Length: 151
Image (cartoon, one colour):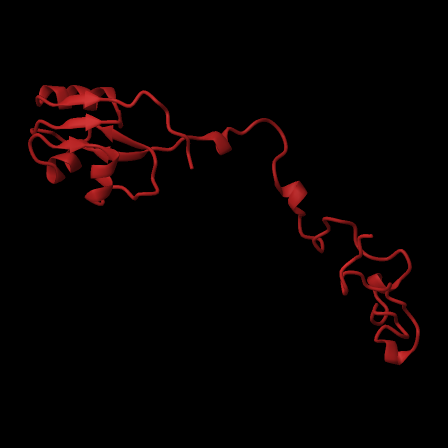
């Protein structure tokens, strides 16, 4: 036979059974007021007259916000400063040089600034104008085709 562990069940609180019970006289309801009355109390979600949460939050239409994909922008000018000729620009190398944090999963190279060094961009998103500038400088772009899941 399966037994309930000792102390797992509690006896029902018996209200109004004298002062020594801890819940005598007013039976734990205090003195007067809305919550002391029979049927008293406020409805679920009531916030004391403040506009309740369920009315403050918009409930109409569709929001794509939870599915929004955000990229960390890295400019070509920043790559010019940090990388030398023939270097490979990847997620790991950007984390190594503290351009992006390790937790940031998505990076996109943008064409802000100029690039004079031959660099290989591997596994990152690259804007069309940035790609043109990298290839004009003699570098190559090996873009990652698999989309990473956002963590």
